Image (cartoon, rainbow, N blue to C red; front, side, top):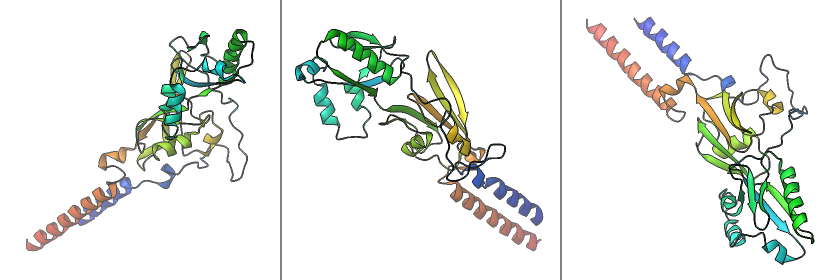
Length: 270
Protein backbone atom coordinates (compact mmCIF):
# COMPACT_ATOMS: atom_id res chain seq x y z
CA UNK A 1 0.00 0.00 0.00
CA UNK A 2 2.81 2.41 0.88
CA UNK A 3 4.59 1.65 -2.40
CA UNK A 4 1.37 2.26 -4.35
CA UNK A 5 0.83 5.63 -2.66
CA UNK A 6 4.47 6.60 -3.29
CA UNK A 7 4.17 5.72 -6.98
CA UNK A 8 0.94 7.72 -7.31
CA UNK A 9 2.56 10.71 -5.60
CA UNK A 10 5.59 10.50 -7.90
CA UNK A 11 3.39 10.36 -11.01
CA UNK A 12 1.31 13.31 -9.79
CA UNK A 13 4.35 15.47 -9.08
CA UNK A 14 5.94 14.57 -12.42
CA UNK A 15 2.76 15.45 -14.30
CA UNK A 16 2.54 18.77 -12.42
CA UNK A 17 6.03 19.89 -13.47
CA UNK A 18 6.42 22.16 -16.50
CA UNK A 19 9.42 21.58 -18.73
CA UNK A 20 11.63 24.57 -19.57
CA UNK A 21 11.22 23.63 -23.23
CA UNK A 22 7.57 24.62 -22.98
CA UNK A 23 8.19 28.08 -21.54
CA UNK A 24 11.49 29.23 -23.10
CA UNK A 25 11.21 31.72 -25.96
CA UNK A 26 13.06 31.45 -29.28
CA UNK A 27 14.61 27.99 -29.14
CA UNK A 28 16.17 26.07 -32.00
CA UNK A 29 13.45 23.46 -32.44
CA UNK A 30 14.06 20.10 -34.18
CA UNK A 31 13.10 20.02 -37.83
CA UNK A 32 13.75 23.74 -38.40
CA UNK A 33 16.95 25.34 -39.74
CA UNK A 34 19.22 26.19 -36.82
CA UNK A 35 19.67 29.90 -36.11
CA UNK A 36 22.84 30.71 -34.20
CA UNK A 37 23.57 33.63 -31.91
CA UNK A 38 24.76 36.80 -33.70
CA UNK A 39 23.46 35.39 -36.99
CA UNK A 40 21.75 37.93 -39.26
CA UNK A 41 18.10 36.99 -39.78
CA UNK A 42 16.36 38.77 -42.68
CA UNK A 43 12.70 39.65 -42.33
CA UNK A 44 10.09 37.52 -44.11
CA UNK A 45 9.77 37.93 -47.87
CA UNK A 46 6.29 39.32 -47.28
CA UNK A 47 7.27 42.91 -46.58
CA UNK A 48 5.54 44.57 -43.67
CA UNK A 49 3.19 47.17 -45.13
CA UNK A 50 -0.11 47.77 -43.41
CA UNK A 51 -3.11 48.33 -45.68
CA UNK A 52 -5.64 50.82 -44.37
CA UNK A 53 -9.10 49.43 -43.62
CA UNK A 54 -12.54 50.89 -42.87
CA UNK A 55 -12.90 52.21 -39.31
CA UNK A 56 -9.14 52.73 -38.94
CA UNK A 57 -8.03 55.99 -37.34
CA UNK A 58 -5.28 57.99 -39.00
CA UNK A 59 -3.45 61.10 -37.85
CA UNK A 60 -3.28 63.73 -40.60
CA UNK A 61 -1.33 66.93 -40.11
CA UNK A 62 -0.82 69.87 -42.44
CA UNK A 63 1.91 72.49 -42.73
CA UNK A 64 2.28 75.59 -44.90
CA UNK A 65 4.11 78.90 -45.03
CA UNK A 66 0.68 80.48 -44.60
CA UNK A 67 -0.83 79.45 -41.22
CA UNK A 68 -4.30 80.50 -42.37
CA UNK A 69 -4.24 77.70 -44.94
CA UNK A 70 -3.56 74.97 -42.38
CA UNK A 71 -6.29 76.33 -40.11
CA UNK A 72 -8.77 75.46 -42.86
CA UNK A 73 -8.13 71.76 -42.15
CA UNK A 74 -8.25 71.97 -38.35
CA UNK A 75 -11.48 70.97 -36.66
CA UNK A 76 -12.45 73.45 -34.01
CA UNK A 77 -10.61 72.70 -30.76
CA UNK A 78 -8.74 69.63 -32.06
CA UNK A 79 -5.33 71.26 -31.73
CA UNK A 80 -6.15 72.32 -28.15
CA UNK A 81 -7.29 68.76 -27.32
CA UNK A 82 -4.08 67.35 -28.75
CA UNK A 83 -1.93 69.78 -26.79
CA UNK A 84 -3.78 69.05 -23.56
CA UNK A 85 -3.50 65.26 -23.90
CA UNK A 86 0.12 64.98 -24.99
CA UNK A 87 1.15 64.89 -21.34
CA UNK A 88 -0.21 61.33 -21.21
CA UNK A 89 2.04 59.87 -23.93
CA UNK A 90 0.72 56.35 -23.26
CA UNK A 91 -2.90 57.38 -23.77
CA UNK A 92 -3.97 55.91 -27.11
CA UNK A 93 -7.34 57.72 -26.98
CA UNK A 94 -5.52 60.88 -28.05
CA UNK A 95 -6.03 60.11 -31.74
CA UNK A 96 -9.60 58.95 -31.18
CA UNK A 97 -10.46 62.58 -30.43
CA UNK A 98 -8.08 64.35 -32.80
CA UNK A 99 -7.55 61.85 -35.65
CA UNK A 100 -9.58 61.11 -38.74
CA UNK A 101 -11.68 57.94 -38.79
CA UNK A 102 -12.33 56.03 -42.01
CA UNK A 103 -16.01 55.28 -42.57
CA UNK A 104 -17.46 51.89 -43.52
CA UNK A 105 -16.64 52.59 -47.19
CA UNK A 106 -13.02 53.45 -46.40
CA UNK A 107 -13.42 57.21 -46.91
CA UNK A 108 -11.85 59.91 -44.78
CA UNK A 109 -13.69 63.25 -44.69
CA UNK A 110 -11.58 66.40 -44.64
CA UNK A 111 -12.71 70.03 -44.39
CA UNK A 112 -13.01 71.71 -47.80
CA UNK A 113 -11.89 68.52 -49.61
CA UNK A 114 -14.82 66.30 -48.70
CA UNK A 115 -14.57 62.50 -48.71
CA UNK A 116 -11.43 60.82 -50.04
CA UNK A 117 -11.19 57.02 -50.26
CA UNK A 118 -7.94 55.77 -48.75
CA UNK A 119 -8.79 52.24 -47.59
CA UNK A 120 -6.86 49.58 -49.46
CA UNK A 121 -3.81 51.89 -49.53
CA UNK A 122 -0.57 51.98 -47.59
CA UNK A 123 0.18 55.02 -45.45
CA UNK A 124 2.40 56.47 -48.20
CA UNK A 125 -0.24 55.94 -50.89
CA UNK A 126 -2.94 57.52 -48.71
CA UNK A 127 -0.71 60.52 -48.00
CA UNK A 128 -0.04 61.01 -51.71
CA UNK A 129 -3.77 60.76 -52.49
CA UNK A 130 -4.63 63.50 -49.99
CA UNK A 131 -1.66 65.58 -51.13
CA UNK A 132 -2.93 65.37 -54.72
CA UNK A 133 -6.42 66.52 -53.63
CA UNK A 134 -4.96 69.51 -51.74
CA UNK A 135 -2.71 70.48 -54.65
CA UNK A 136 -5.77 70.59 -56.89
CA UNK A 137 -7.58 72.85 -54.42
CA UNK A 138 -4.82 75.29 -53.39
CA UNK A 139 -2.21 76.95 -55.55
CA UNK A 140 0.04 77.59 -52.56
CA UNK A 141 1.95 74.56 -51.28
CA UNK A 142 0.48 72.72 -48.32
CA UNK A 143 2.48 69.81 -46.94
CA UNK A 144 0.63 66.69 -45.72
CA UNK A 145 1.76 64.20 -43.09
CA UNK A 146 -0.29 61.02 -42.57
CA UNK A 147 0.38 58.10 -40.26
CA UNK A 148 -1.51 55.40 -38.41
CA UNK A 149 -2.72 56.54 -35.00
CA UNK A 150 -0.77 53.81 -33.25
CA UNK A 151 -1.17 50.03 -33.44
CA UNK A 152 -4.31 48.84 -31.68
CA UNK A 153 -4.49 45.18 -30.68
CA UNK A 154 -6.40 42.98 -28.24
CA UNK A 155 -5.04 40.25 -25.93
CA UNK A 156 -7.12 37.34 -24.61
CA UNK A 157 -6.30 34.23 -22.62
CA UNK A 158 -3.12 33.65 -20.61
CA UNK A 159 -1.62 37.16 -20.81
CA UNK A 160 -0.69 39.31 -17.84
CA UNK A 161 -3.71 41.44 -18.72
CA UNK A 162 -6.50 40.88 -21.24
CA UNK A 163 -7.55 44.13 -22.86
CA UNK A 164 -7.25 46.33 -25.93
CA UNK A 165 -3.98 48.25 -26.02
CA UNK A 166 -2.30 50.83 -28.25
CA UNK A 167 1.40 50.97 -29.10
CA UNK A 168 2.24 54.46 -30.33
CA UNK A 169 4.74 53.34 -32.95
CA UNK A 170 4.73 52.71 -36.69
CA UNK A 171 5.89 49.12 -36.26
CA UNK A 172 5.78 46.65 -33.36
CA UNK A 173 6.79 43.01 -32.95
CA UNK A 174 4.89 40.22 -31.23
CA UNK A 175 7.29 40.60 -28.29
CA UNK A 176 6.49 44.32 -28.04
CA UNK A 177 2.85 43.28 -27.66
CA UNK A 178 3.77 40.69 -25.01
CA UNK A 179 5.77 43.23 -23.04
CA UNK A 180 3.03 45.87 -23.21
CA UNK A 181 0.35 43.37 -22.16
CA UNK A 182 2.29 41.71 -19.37
CA UNK A 183 4.36 38.66 -20.21
CA UNK A 184 2.32 35.50 -20.66
CA UNK A 185 2.16 33.52 -17.43
CA UNK A 186 3.91 30.20 -16.90
CA UNK A 187 0.77 28.20 -17.70
CA UNK A 188 0.34 29.58 -21.22
CA UNK A 189 0.87 27.39 -24.27
CA UNK A 190 3.61 29.45 -25.86
CA UNK A 191 3.63 27.12 -28.84
CA UNK A 192 -0.01 27.93 -29.59
CA UNK A 193 -0.51 31.67 -29.88
CA UNK A 194 -3.35 32.48 -32.26
CA UNK A 195 -3.42 35.72 -34.24
CA UNK A 196 -6.84 36.73 -35.54
CA UNK A 197 -5.96 39.17 -38.31
CA UNK A 198 -8.19 41.48 -40.31
CA UNK A 199 -7.87 41.52 -44.09
CA UNK A 200 -9.69 43.41 -46.81
CA UNK A 201 -13.19 41.94 -46.68
CA UNK A 202 -12.58 39.25 -44.06
CA UNK A 203 -10.56 37.64 -41.28
CA UNK A 204 -7.97 34.85 -40.97
CA UNK A 205 -6.69 32.91 -37.96
CA UNK A 206 -2.95 32.20 -37.83
CA UNK A 207 -0.98 30.15 -35.28
CA UNK A 208 2.59 30.90 -34.22
CA UNK A 209 5.06 29.30 -31.83
CA UNK A 210 6.81 31.68 -29.42
CA UNK A 211 9.24 28.89 -28.51
CA UNK A 212 10.53 28.70 -32.07
CA UNK A 213 13.51 30.85 -33.06
CA UNK A 214 12.41 30.77 -36.70
CA UNK A 215 9.57 33.10 -35.66
CA UNK A 216 12.03 35.95 -36.23
CA UNK A 217 11.81 35.31 -39.99
CA UNK A 218 8.04 34.76 -39.96
CA UNK A 219 5.56 37.16 -41.61
CA UNK A 220 3.78 37.24 -38.24
CA UNK A 221 6.78 38.53 -36.28
CA UNK A 222 5.27 42.01 -36.62
CA UNK A 223 1.76 42.61 -35.33
CA UNK A 224 -0.71 44.68 -37.29
CA UNK A 225 -3.46 47.09 -36.41
CA UNK A 226 -6.62 45.37 -35.10
CA UNK A 227 -4.86 42.04 -34.41
CA UNK A 228 -6.42 39.83 -31.72
CA UNK A 229 -3.89 37.68 -29.82
CA UNK A 230 -5.11 34.60 -27.95
CA UNK A 231 -2.96 32.33 -25.75
CA UNK A 232 -4.32 28.93 -24.72
CA UNK A 233 -3.82 27.64 -21.13
CA UNK A 234 -2.06 24.35 -20.41
CA UNK A 235 -4.11 21.45 -19.06
CA UNK A 236 -2.34 21.85 -15.71
CA UNK A 237 -4.37 25.08 -15.39
CA UNK A 238 -7.06 23.03 -13.61
CA UNK A 239 -4.78 22.70 -10.54
CA UNK A 240 -4.46 26.48 -10.17
CA UNK A 241 -2.92 29.50 -11.84
CA UNK A 242 0.75 30.39 -12.00
CA UNK A 243 0.57 32.28 -8.70
CA UNK A 244 -1.09 29.64 -6.57
CA UNK A 245 0.07 26.42 -8.26
CA UNK A 246 3.01 25.94 -5.86
CA UNK A 247 0.77 26.64 -2.87
CA UNK A 248 -1.83 24.19 -4.15
CA UNK A 249 0.77 21.43 -4.55
CA UNK A 250 2.24 22.18 -1.12
CA UNK A 251 -1.20 21.99 0.47
CA UNK A 252 -1.91 18.73 -1.35
CA UNK A 253 1.42 17.30 -0.15
CA UNK A 254 0.58 18.27 3.43
CA UNK A 255 -2.77 16.49 3.27
CA UNK A 256 -1.18 13.46 1.63
CA UNK A 257 1.56 13.25 4.30
CA UNK A 258 -1.04 13.56 7.04
CA UNK A 259 -3.08 10.82 5.42
CA UNK A 260 -0.08 8.52 5.19
CA UNK A 261 0.80 9.20 8.82
CA UNK A 262 -2.74 8.50 9.96
CA UNK A 263 -2.83 5.33 7.85
CA UNK A 264 0.46 4.16 9.46
CA UNK A 265 -0.82 4.83 12.95
CA UNK A 266 -4.09 3.03 12.34
CA UNK A 267 -2.32 0.09 10.74
CA UNK A 268 0.06 -0.15 13.72
CA UNK A 269 -2.88 -0.34 16.11
CA UNK A 270 -4.46 -3.20 14.27
